[in-house]
Image (cartoon, rainbow, N blue to C red):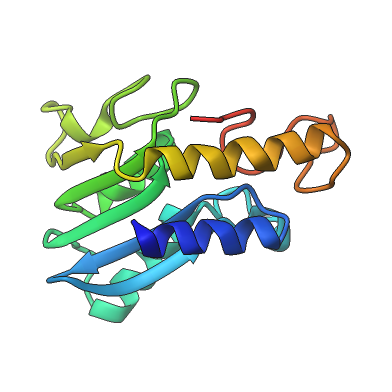
Length: 164
């Protein structure tokens, strides 16, 4: 989680919603990314999706069964779906997301036995620090400190208003 939090801090410094993700295989980080939606203009550029893409490329296999996805904020439906598609063996997340979380809070894609793959989920690892990053980011936006924004004034990037 330390590495994922570092990615989240870097994302915040770049004006992105502070979410970071790493993919670990056999104790080795094979991919790491932070949110890049604002920089790229890509609505799918969530940290998890980017890290999973990089991990698949690095390993030469789209199936990441032996991988652990570590992310600072509970994956949204899109990211949980990406983890499902990659057949990730385990998901570890920090702050829960009651508004859009899809690995336990609002939905649980990772444990849905109707799908052809499930993932083990560990929640709450580094939750306080992850939530504090999100809270500080959105507080700075409310105080006029900049950060990612959408044309409608709602937070852009991951899970508008998510504070853990």
